[in-house]
View 1: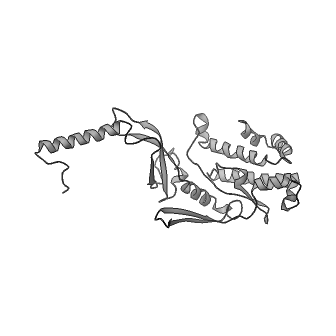
View 2: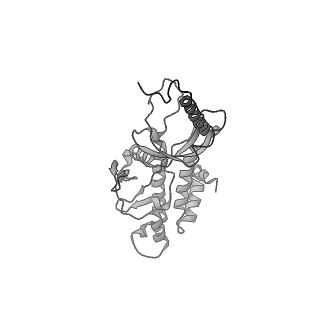
View 3: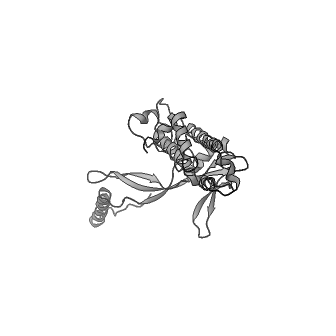
Length: 273
């Protein structure tokens, strides 16, 4: 039997224990001991994958993998103050490991083409004894879209010469658009599309997307969220894909006009310009 936290029959011991419990309750009712910005390392177990309820919410893809430690930061108090015996906080994951892992595994059929080959997550111990994770993937030697655009807009000879042709550049855009559409159809959202996160595999004339953030927390609220809880991520990806390809001064005007005239559904993503 575990020892009692106070001495039975001792009024002094019982009084001290009572005061300690009241102090702890006061701390939890006030802003202490939790505060915005505090961080916690957690390993979230995966909830049951099946539900007897037909309209159950889908499991966030960041929870589809087990035993991936994430660092969570407290962002907003939802229940604090007098009258409560506990605090409830909204927390945000600061770790991208789980999101990266889910993105590369959900898009496994595209590895070696529009995303790098992915060799998994490896648990390691740093020389200073800190536990860490390594995501190992293929290194793409080609230039980034930003470097390609700089070369296109210059007069220097090189491998970018072919992309000074508008049709060749537009073909690259369509390959990128197909990649993002395919990712979205698989429930994966990049969130960090920039000219520097799109690489050109020159040998195979193919674009490769890196640094997938894959934020799958529903951001949308209101009527639109019922149709697509990830509409905000979808719009974010599409808009930034367009802006990335508009970065070529040589092709900007023609590509903007082409999308407006021929791809009006894609042009709508620029509505917040």
